[in-house]
Length: 487
Ligand code: ADQ
Image (cartoon, rainbow, N blue to C red; front, side):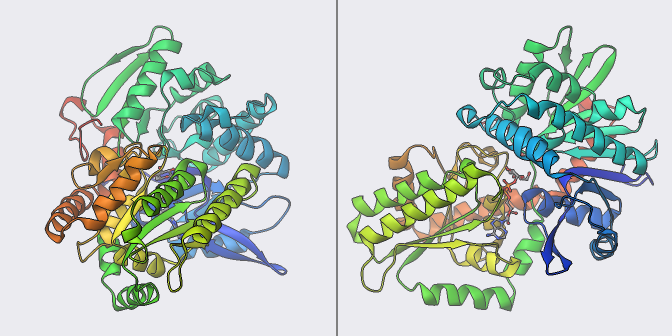
């Protein structure tokens, strides 16, 4: 795969650009999600096609903008068109009101509306159609994430024979939770039409295998190490785990620029009172922001000596605003920030600074570089790239990472981070206190461990590892990517 001429076809729900209306025309904005951050540099380097929904509905001609986006990005982009009703049932519905909460173990947030399923399958078939129009038999088709679990079976139906791979960016839930899914067997069987299936962590793969053993008749699973082989109906499917990462060098080099250094200086100049605790998340109930705010409040209650000496800077990037639960979460966060600030603010010191907008890269890096403590406490997360970005950007090596044990990044980063249960408010509050008073030597030693682990296992290693696993002849010798130890 590395040095042959087979094209790489990427399919994901969204194209790596967002189209936003500006009067009579459309403006292109680079996407901000983890998937875009991870894959754009790779496609740019090797060329290929990215297939996805441009994010707008209706009969709008965006071909000029797509050509422009393709030229700018350095790879071709092909759109999959969705109508309002498709968005409502496939995207908001099955993807984000069923699979997203269920796969993050939040089954009480699910809306198992029966009308969602057919729409989900229809759109997976539409993606397959566009993939089929762009892929030759020798190409490798790499499909991403929970919106497209069933695309391989639709590719089969239209006779596409190219090799296919699938990577799930979010967690795969334990059997007890997955069992609740009304379409559990259909989904598992469809997933088995991919030639290789990748998960973020050993935890996710273990859950998936357990579900396969429970719901798929006559399946056998063999092998050990990073890649297993499942055999069913005369077909073999590779199943592995591939912890995603970041472009470490790009982050650390950019964090060292004058522009970022100046911006970082201004951030601390504005907040001269002690240490900054940084939270950076997409607006999402899986990221645990309300629990985090409670933990910070608990810290201020227990440690009056920290008043005026610590500030929580919570950055939230707007996301999925068309889904009511997300709008409610925003209101909840703003109310909590207001209440805590109302209680503790003193002249010259506001304990929580709240930013609700997307930041450009240098600004984001300035926050990473200058914050003494990063507080990253998702209730569950496939990986969490913010944790890795913080480490890469903390070039003075004085920062402390507090990380949820339920983030996919936890097994890799546990030797340098302080791991916490995000639901345990007392524990998180104690962890902030420990980080606040940690001496310089320990901070340095922990940050060095974190940085060397993220630098070794960067995004390029992730992509190579997935693509090599897709074609490797002998899996016994398959080199493990990154860390192997389970949590
Ligand atoms: P996300 O849920 O989006 O990704 P994450 O991995 O943390 O979560 O990635 C978020 C990305 O958004 C980061 O690259 C970060 O730089 C960027 N970002 C965050 N706040 C921002 C801000 N205010 N302004 C600009 N950019 C901001 C999904 C899964 C994760 C998995 C990734 C990749 O949910 O678990 O790690 O895909 O597989």
